Length: 331
Length: 252
Ligand SMILES: Nc1ncnc2c1ncn2[C@@H]1O[C@H](COP(=O)(O)OP(=O)(O)O)[C@@H](O)[C@H]1O
Ligand SMILES: [Mg+2]
Image 1 (cartoon, protein in one colour):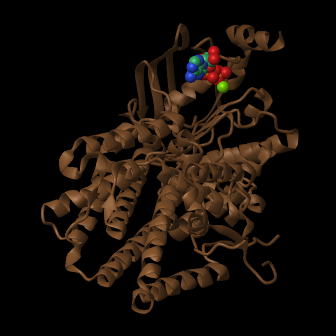
Image 2 (image 1 turned 180 degrees about the horizontal axis):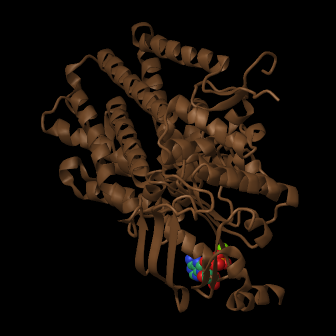
């Protein structure tokens, strides 16, 4: 008997094409503000923000098993952090960056508390944190209290300039965060996180450092949420505590991730695109709209638990592992 | 060390040991002053009726359960308070009685977790090692399957493969042979003997004594939270207390 040779492939032709297409797309998107009208730029900016939210929630819940319903804590904190800094004469775009960083710090502070909880109690705990933060903001009159607050300081730019800068900043955050998730999944951390998601005790018994991995992921998601919140503010220039800290963000993220494909790299991108369309068509229907989103997400969770992307037999990015037998004719 | 024919092979240094271990669940005294020593290269079997505390002892040795009192040492160093992830990286591998596969990952990815975290291997080394472990545990053909699609036999193989992938010096196996056919059990015995011959200390809880005896050179019998016999397998099995506690109950 001859020993058969095996090897493990990370990439395939599809993933090589897929990564090139994604990089190309990023480069093309970077030129949009030069060629398109203001509304397109602004709409694409909000699409990028949705993609950031979906990618972060998928990393947290889909890969790490940390099903948070309170990521709006970081969205709101990022937005209000930007306002707070801008009120103290920090240049607004710098304030956006600093507020995203501050959200990561907030997540690091909260991690020892909320990560003690798991499953349902974790979900409830994250939501309580978000509501508490919202309450604190409402009570603070210097931040506009319950009526909301505008971002000042961006009027030094012409409106089209401002939209272009915000757009590029959103695109830069998106690329950065997608890159971060890619690096996480490409390395052993991807397998470690999924192991924790599926069985935390078993993961520990195989040597996985559970606590630093979970905390690291939670901090990354906090950073992403804060960045999204700060960008929402920069894009719309006005925020109001009840909506920026609102649980509807979680409904959006659930919809995007569950419909697109939880626990896949590509799913949330697809889900965010779909959500963007849905938002465009139905956003005026208010409460029914949220209920519809929830029902659709629920239906997917029940009947197509790995989302639409599970119907596509292709992986666009080389983050998986595939065992192959070497030699001719075995592909 | 040179071994002359007829000499007794001295067991190596103590790798893993526990002393005066106690564990209570409510009023149940599950471990009652248990002592345990595994020397380098030994193959130790643990038998005893259901509820004797065998799994709990393994939990305490692996670090997934902290004893109420007593000490666990790895290479002589106190590890009573260190978690399973630390003990695993320092050489304690563990397979659970009820397999706990990572259902959302492939068989290969399950094994890679052990190779990259437990054994600390990187990139191609981790890949090569994982392929070798899959081959040894006869899982190559299922490598790309999601673990939640596996049947019991393959779940058991995966449970052991993952533990082996961590490159353990001590391998703790909990009823890994239960429910297997004779042919499957024979394959398992061959795999474990091969590991033991390669220097891995084996601690194996199993009810099927005749299978166990093909591997172990020492047998421990537990009953009601206590070690009631420990020594050469045939001596332990003929011990009156063991016959009474274990075989008596097994027959009833
Ligand atoms: N986490 C736990 N909580 C309560 N009781 C437990 C727990 N784990 C084990 N036990 C009890 O401890 C006893 C010993 O269990 P175990 O160590 O699994 O025995 P064995 O593996 O020898 O069958 C059993 O009566 C079992 O019900
Ligand atoms: Mg047991």
